[in-house]
Amino acid sequence: MDVFPVCFVAGEGLTPFKKVSEYVIGFLLLASIALLIRKRDMFDPTGLQLLVSSITLTILSEMCFSVYVDVYGFANLTGHFLKITAFYCIYKAIIELGMAKPFAVLFRNLKQSEESLRKSHEVLERRVEERTAELVEANKHLRQQIEERKQADEALRESEMKYRIVADNTYDWEWWRDPEGNFIYASPSCKDITHHSGEEFVADPDLLLKIIHPDDRACFARHMSEVEEKHSPGEAEFRILRPDGTIRWITHVCRPVFDDQGRFLGRRGSNHDITERKEVEKALQESEERYRTLIETMNEGFGIADERGVWTYVNEKFCKMLGYSYDEIVGRPVHDWLDEANRKIYEEQSMRRRKGEQGPYEIAGTRKDGATVYALVSPNLFLAKLVSFKGVSPWSLILRSVRRPKNLSAKLFLKSKC
Image (tube, rainbow, N blue to C red; front, side):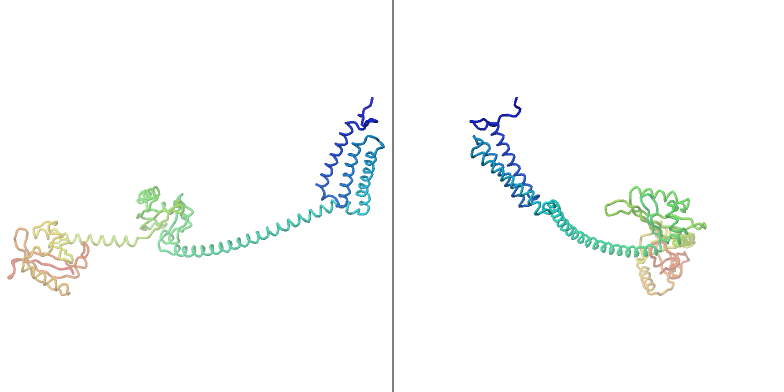
């Protein structure tokens, strides 16, 4: 039993199997030509032409083998000649060319790799040049930014130095506390005021409250609670205790600090030593109380008038002598108690007093009950300098009841304050 199909029948020619097989072989060879052309970069041009020619001749020979009827016919003969020619082309392409140009054939892949490497190197060089240009530009920009940053840092250092010089050399104790109540800064003046250094306040946030006088701590705590709760400015006065036990009066002002985005950065404060002012105020208050007691307990009537001639103060004796209450006298002109003739005397004497002339003069006034009181007016600059109750008081009067003189019904003794 034959395994391989019959390909030729004598007297009839080729069988369908044979013809189909030749056509399939032809198509496969055409595909090989297409593949060679696609990979032509891998072959020497002469060798590629010989290979393509050999395959083409082989296809033609296969076509001849598919049409002959007689094995000795012209078609079969032509096919064999074409086959021989195809083998010759393969010989030329592989054997002869390989011997004539062995290195071209042997190192074809190497040359192709070298060419590919050269192209890759050119691409890489171009990319390196582009990247180098970019880096040079970026470096230039970076140097410019560094220079600008240096200038900004220098300006910031100068500005910081100016503000620190101002802050560190102020007479008042300047400070800044963060939102948690810790001291960020305390000026050196705190040493002069409290006898504690700025470093001590930074190290101990509660030191300020500790040195406040026990009687003032609750008031200061309320103040801080209010301003911190509302983030509002505030002020207060309190006493502090130095390490040696001495007491100093402090006036305190503070306000919240915010950045450009409105975030709370803490509280800025200033403490000023007002101990000397407090001592002066206390001395003035004691002095005023002494002179007020003296005036209130005088046996004579005493009154003070302003530059317009309006009563600003009278003592109780003065009210009793004229028969009016305090509210009925204060705020009214002095001449309301004088008749026409005595008003003229009062105006003449007022003009003399403004010129600096001082001397006693007689005058008469009218009580509330209609009775007449007589007075002697005498300017007294020393008394005017000692006594002052409400604003500027140009002159003052001391009223003393006396017997009726020859030219008046009663006497009123007045000392004026200029």
